[in-house]
Length: 187
Image (tube, rainbow, N blue to C red; front, side, top):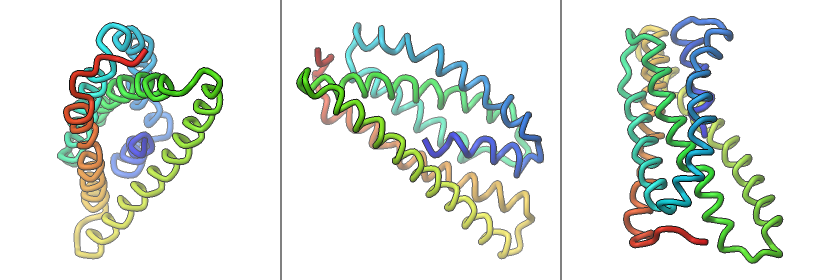
């Protein structure tokens, strides 16, 4: 979830765009997530959590790695396209994993589990945003103090941060391959 704040930073800090432009660049990804989320529920019912988990993990890892390799001269619309893939991945991951995770809880504890999950997701998102923005800022400052131009240093910090996010997303590929072997769905 830390990457949701990184795209507007990219548009405004590195590309010099306005806040309105940052919102417009983020809009296609938000629309893609709004479209895929209900579809992910139907796909979960049809194929189970394993396939959605694997597809979401691959797309999230790939989109983070693509942003990690994005050159400074790339158009902001390339970043917006990569963000659409990231948003589709999150849509394939969030709702099915919440459904799958709460399916193991007894009926009387479902409200408690849902509340706990929502709170933990909010806290983890805030921590992720703080960690990754802090990482980007520190890496950019280090590169700038090493003689790199400001825009190039900021892009360097952004690239390395997205590569770190890509590395953090790799377990989302491994978990369904190793731990969910043969599992279609929990009902």
